[in-house]
Image (cartoon, rainbow, N blue to C red):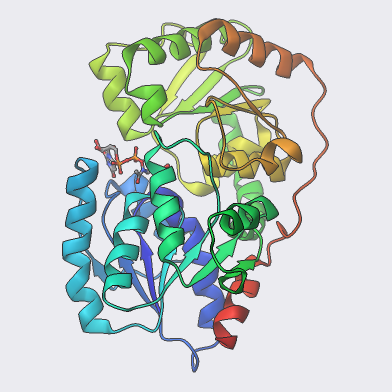
Length: 357
Ligand code: UD1
C-alpha cells in the first residue's frame, strides 16, 4: 500500500489508517510518500511526531508553485516511485493538489486508487479543491465516504455503488484518539491565553488573496476584539498576504500566532467561545466538539456540519461578520452531537474493506 500525503490536512487522515494496518503486518506492507507540498516544519514535521506517523519512505520535495507547476512536478516525481514499488493500492487523502496529481499518475499506470474522504462537493468550481475532488473520485476504484450526502453526490456522477463505502469521518478517529492528550496538555497551555476568546483560521485564496476581502475580515476581527480577544494562528499563505497588503492588528486583544501543532490547536478549539474559519476539517472538528463555528465561505462541501452540527456560513464582509459573531456569542452554546459514523472507528471500517478485496 502506498499512502500519499502532501499538505497539512492529509497527515491526520493517514495516521489512523496506517496505525490500523500496522495491526496486520502479514497482510499489509505500507509505504508513506510525502509529496512535499507543505514543507515548513510547523506545516509538516510537527504532525509526524504528534500522530506517530513513520518518517516518509519517499519525499518528492516538490514545494510551492502555481497549480500547474506543483501538480505537474508531483506527477513527474511520483511516476518513477510507482514504477519502483508496484503497489496493489495507492491511498490518497482529501482534496489537495497532491491527491489529484498522484491519482492521475497511478490510474494511467494501472495502479488502483483508493480515495479517503470521497464524494464531498461544494458545487463551486472556482475552488481548486472541488476540481481535485471531482477528478480524484472519477479515477478511484475504492471511494471511502464520510457521510450520506457524499454517497448521493457520487451516485449522481455515475460512480458505481459497488466502489463506494460509507465509513464515516477518519478525522474524528484522530480527534477522539488525541483528545485526552490535548486535554491534559491544556493546563500548561491555558495560562498563555485569555480565558474567553474567538479562534480564527483563514487560508482560502477567495478570502486571503484579494486585498479588499482581507481588509473586510481584518476590520471585523479588529471590531470584535473590543468585545472578546481574538487568537489567529496564521497560515503561511495568509502571513504573506497580510504583509503584502500591509495589514496588521492594531489592538493588543487581536493576536496573530504562528501555525500551531495538532494538539495545541485542538485544545484551543475545545475551549473557544467561537471559531471563525474557512477550513474544511475545522468545520468537522467543531461539529464533533460542539463548539460554535462560523465558516467564511458562500458554500461548504460538508453540509452535515450545518444540518447536524454547529456550523453556519457567513459572508466575508465586515458588517455581516461582526453581526454573525455577536449573535453567536450572545446565543446559547449548541448541544454536542455528531453525524452517524463519526465515532472514532472509521479506520477500522476502511481497513476491513481492504482486507476483503
Ligand atoms: C493547500 C490545499 C488546501 C488545504 C491547505 C491546508 C491545494 C490546492 N490546496 O492550500 O486545500 O486546505 O493546503 O493548509 O492543494 N507555504 C509555505 N510553507 C509551506 C507550505 C506553503 O510557506 O510549508 C506557502 C507558500 O507561499 C505557498 C502558499 O503557502 O505558495 C500556499 O501553499 P499551497 O500548498 O500551494 O496551498 P495552501 O493554501 O496551503
